[in-house]
Length: 504
Image (tube, rainbow, N blue to C red; front, side):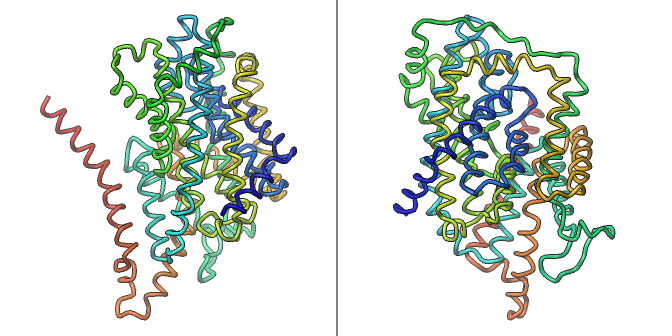
């Protein structure tokens, strides 16, 4: 591992890769600062353009954009009271009051220190957790992979939608889309509507771009009354860097606890930064000796939320790299990028493509350092530029990029058509309160679940009842118990809340 990690680090520190990461961090910060342009959309837009890069450069660029976008959401949260990304919801609670009190620059720099620090801690957790988990995953057979995909669907379906039934329905819809084309085992042609272009299935990246980018652009286009964002003025403050540093590290337990919360919440499929930042904020307030100051401009609230949501980036990579289960929508996009590069996410990455895997991990560490530098030197300028972009220019520009990106993957106009159709379907489903997360995860996990189910059944043909192979293997039993708990917990929580309302 040591030699591989060293060679991967050297590869990341090439001039070319450093420039790609600097671009990724800066572009991600701009996108994250614009409400509506989520981290998922930022990563999805750039994936087609990384196809021509070598794997290390491509993955490093995507990781940098992801980190930058999550951090960029803090700017609009602090200065406009509108979270640029869902992961910055908690930052508005104390960041905006600080800006109103004339401490906007201090809030921004505090968020920068906390975000970069949380990302660095998350990267360390990623590196040290991934290898042991990958070794366990190597013992997985087809039945275990079937159950792990069911676990992933169960978790994200219950967390990504307020209505669990709609979440499960979205996952099932994604599974149906994944069945288009030739069956991976058996070779049956399914749901192609007689179109040869569909025999290989729908193009994953085109569908992802459609589901995550087009609905947001249609939503913004439908609300063009606010042409520009109105931000709180940020004045120069003396000694602000020292105060911001002190805000983060004078209470190191809050910072470290929030980073660890973010990393481990990120590991849970479907949770992500939007949950981690609220959990960390709640814990910071609960542990504080002055809980009444939270929500009035307490810097510790900004520290907690920003450290947590940036640590989820690296935490979400743990199940993706080790099990092939994308835990969050941006991780699903990176899953597609790995597939485009000819890499299969899962434990095989650590044996067949170890140098790329470790290079990706190291690049996340470097990206967080770059994010700190860019945030300190140019964060305020970036946000000023962002506030000057009118929606009537932003929307057509991004739609143009979605079309260009979809076409560039295979130079196939059918991929553009699939992207546009997927976008309109995604918009309609979003209007009906269906979250795109379960749909996309169903699309990604469908082929893995199908292979696990069919191959597991074929393995069990030597038994009197072939289906018993799915319920008798030790790891399968553990996974079934976890699935029952994860599926039953939201139902129990809802039942308990209704009982409380009935008592009141």
